[in-house]
Image 1 (tube, one colour):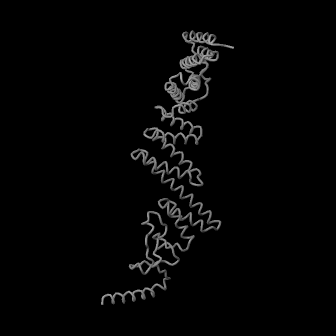
Image 2 (cartoon, one colour):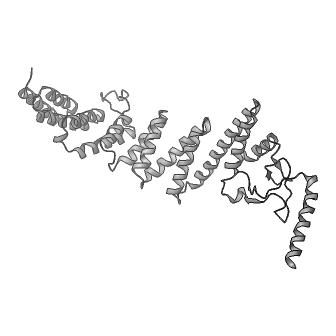
Image 3 (spheres, rainbow, N blue to C red):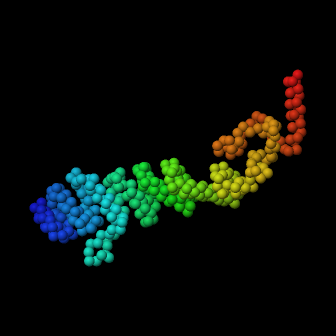
Length: 356
């Protein structure tokens, strides 16, 4: 059993030790006073005094513990902004390499690194503080070092979202793109990481058009497109090997249509042409005919199959030409001359009658 009187005795003993410069012993007395006290005011003052002495002794981990207790138990009686600001400062000290040394004459005996714990707590209490952008970026890099990629990506994304006009947001977006690029490169069966990488790279290019890293962004964007095209081609090749030619053709066609600027597009185009015989390369011009018989291009388009809209004029909407089915006449090469003569004769007669 104890009361405020016993707590005050321990508190006064701690003050005497603090005056003598024995800060670690003084902090222990202040912590004892907190346990003995009944009054919340005495408890709060004891924690503040203990935190002060731990700071003087450079035991910043113990000081952080006292600050956390102050926030949880005495929020209405403290300067919250100053307490959280001190937590950010402790996080910075740990980030620069500080480790608590409880026994001064044994400096090689150091306590664990608490950088992540301190930054997590400070950002939870004040996610939009002045120090928050840089602290969150540092926290993400620490998670990368510890191979906790999921949390690293979360904090990088939060940095770009919460602090859009800061250098930390610029660096975090670039770092996030780099992580996603590595994930897409190492293994991305459904291309989810590739799509996310392209989104982040496009977002970076839009937000920071004058960034010196823009060349890196464009270069890696093209690499991601190459990854996707190669992966789709590999899937198509697999379906081709098991005899599912129709499905294989769909994957090859997607590469040709949506990833025409990649190094894989030409190879997929050749596979598609070999797979579907009705797709014929016209005299090395890489033009496809959607019919089994080649279309003879004439000056008068009404003789052949008139095209309403071609793929290159459709902004990528159509993979094949859209033809006018009401006027389209598909003929074998040997039948073409005979029908052309009939057409020209009929047309000539019509023109002569009109002239009369």
